[in-house]
Length: 210
Image 1 (cartoon, rainbow, N blue to C red):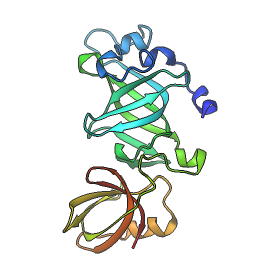
Image 2 (image 1 turned 135 degrees about the horizontal axis):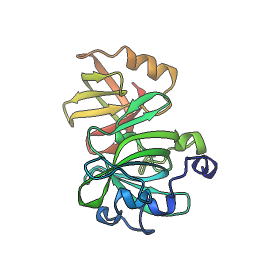
Image 3 (image 1 turned 90 degrees about the vertical axis):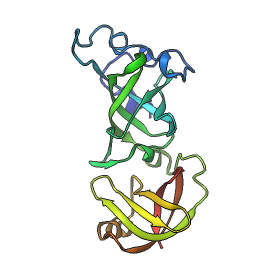
Image 4 (image 1 turned 90 degrees about the horizontal axis):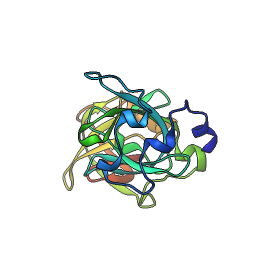
């Protein structure tokens, strides 16, 4: 991971995320400070980029806790417009796992915090360790229902269940050929069973179709 993070273009990473251990969004500092004054002028949207390791995705606050190469920690905001890309395929932010290394394209947000407009995963935790970094990833859930909306580009679909309501099911970063092929053939109204890890309330990362 350090080799990958060290290869990123220089934006002084030590200053990018404020003081070590700071999880409060308001302590992250302005983007102009992060870029050493290289941000846009008045009236221009300031942008920057850094490479960091994902520590946690907080769906309640819509924030991502990250850590830089030298151990600086902090949080960046995300929303429904944030794009996560891995191997030329889009995923929801909730597909990010602890241990994933990614390039974060940042913009200045309100309250002097940082917003991630795009996240390009450089190396997933599965690539590096062969194991999932999701909290509670050892517990599998089995669900059955009817397929709702299918988003082939993002690799997600809605599963309408009787017991749990509508569940958003997402493909893993590296789905097997059988899973990927079955997903491509999904149609609204299909009856399917799935097995996967609960990554957030109402969201499951698919392991296999049943």
